[in-house]
Structures are given as structure tokens and as C-alpha cells.
View 1 (cartoon, rainbow, N blue to C red):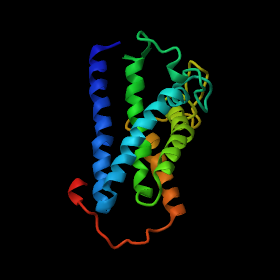
View 2 (view 1 turned 60 degrees about the vertical axis):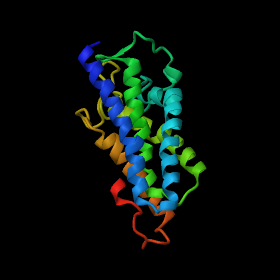
View 3 (view 1 turned 180 degrees about the vertical axis):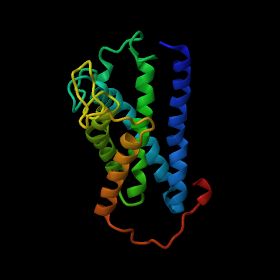
View 4 (view 1 turned 30 degrees about the vertical axis):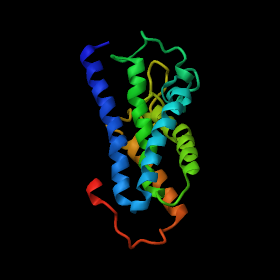
Length: 205
């Protein structure tokens, strides 16, 4: 472990979490009608809570396990085998888990903008949980977990396109996955019925 790396990732973990709470909640809250602001806040906060549990239970294992090139398996479900002395690179593994969890929170929260004001609360929780486990976590494994796109020499996994895919800021893992899901949902839901009312508080944005 490297102390400087650990200190910085602790700060970075907090910053990424702040991007969701309150950042994303305020961003989407400012774009909707005033009567729906609290529901948007609840969407973002509830997603943060549920994704934390889902990431702990299965998501981290699917993303960073070592089953095969396509998914990480369930060997690390509920952080099995992860102790206070476990390391991931130069970081304590529990910190690496927490840092990656903040991305597992913000990525499904980004999709909220595609269906805000048009779906019920139960759909938000169910869709976000299933999407994170079935779509987001496997892509994390492919790119950041030594899977299909990144490769892993120790596990004998060769990158799909010859050279390892490098995604330093989540352009593929976070934004492309969330953007594609949001586009599909927006197409399925269709245009809004009332598109003339302006955002209630652009200052939040």
C-alpha cells in the first residue's frame, strides 16, 4: 500500500459521491417542474442506498472477480475473501471497493434524466438495480477488471481488439453505458406530453 495513493483515493471517493449527492440531485431537480423536485431527490438518494447494497452483495464480485473474460463471477460476493489486509494495486481493497461503489451509484443515477416525471418509484429502484448488475458491472469487468476488452496476462485473457482498452475517466464504462440506456428508455417512453413548461429553477443546474 502507498499512503499518498490511499489519501488521494479517499478524497476522490468523497468527490465522486458528492457528484451524485447533492450534485446530480440538484441538477435534475432544477430541470423538472417544482412539484417533482422532491421525487427527483428521492430517486437519487434511493439509488445511492440501493446501489450500495447491490454493489456490496454482487456488483463488486461481478466487476472485479476473476471467473473469466466476460464476468467476474460470485467469488467475491458480499466481499468474501476481502480482509483489512487485502490490497488492490497500491490501495487497501476495501477502499478500492468504496471508490468503485461511487461509480456504481452515479452511473444508474445519470439515467434518471431520461425518465424523470414519467415512471413510478418502484420502477426506478428495480430498473436501476437490475441494470447495474446485468449491464454496468459486466462492462466494468471488461474494461477495468481485466476482462474482455482490457485483457489480463496473469489469467491468460487476451484483449478482444489486440490492444488493451484504456478508460481512465469512465467514458466507456460510465457515460456510454448510461447514455445508451437513457436513449433506449427515452425512445421506449416516447416524447413528453407537455414540453412547453420551462425548468423550475435553472440555478440548480
